Image (cartoon, rainbow, N blue to C red; front, side, top):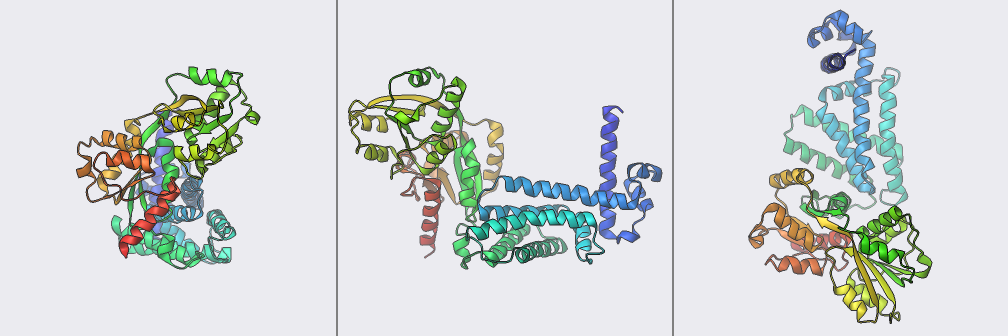
Length: 465
């Protein structure tokens, strides 16, 4: 069979399934005739039987194909989540949205689940159990981590799924607008979370609800960082302003790691430096002897990435900054000690200078560079930004701020950010922003995304008082 005939056959089958779904949604199973399906699909009855030998086969295909899409959709969103509340939100949200978008299938599903177990379609029973098991896993994990109350999992599943179904039914019957659907979904989730959450104060569960946050970071970091805010109820517009690329040359790095002279201290200033360091060693097929070196990781995230690459960390400074590193290493005798600092191509000089003053011999080379992300990467972000009214812009480095101005072609930053809050992850970023006459309203004492999220909650609560 030619490719065009194969495509035509697949398209015709999809039309038949779509029209049959419409019929089964309007009529009881026994009232739907194959003649009706053929007529609505605009195919001969004989052609219809070439695709489906019976009404039962056609009905089962409708159930199977829709449930497969539903399960694929839910599993896809859950695969990107690691936090419990965010996983629950993704489950509720994706199930709600799928059923709203497939109204005819929802009506069929609704008619089936209202029947007794003996009358229920076996495929629906099996697929529903698979769908429920995903939710049960979230609840079990939440209970184990003391995030959810010690509720019976089967009861919690029935409660949550039942409320989703009722909410979808209400939305369809009342023909809710897009704005009403968003409100319905958010209220649904708040009710579900309130029902099983270990606490009781809803404002404590989602304190950033109704806040829209523009998060600027690297392409790789943006999605992960967004979850820290979205699980607190915020709508997050991910706006990548940086893309990590290899340095112009690895020559300096290769010479340092190949040198037989001892490296006394190895300082990783970010997760990116760890990743690029490890990748280059792998390309060189070289093992680094960490037994002779004290490894310093700035920040808990950097330390975790070191752990993933089996790099033993000896020192994590209390302050996640260059100043914090100098303070931590001042306890050691650095006289003539070799300190290797892999860094960004635009890395700052404060840290090397501070350590040189303590007598250290500094070796530092770029292991990555940053560039503007491609147009295809930010097209969606630009559209979302245009359609939204942000409450706060988050900048995680001077580069994210400068690149945002470049991407958005902002000539007057003070005017652009007037009337909105601006958050900076640390003092260096704050200084870069304020040098452009833009006020920074939020800056944490712990220079991490979590610290920033906590400070944001504190800031908005103080404004409400």
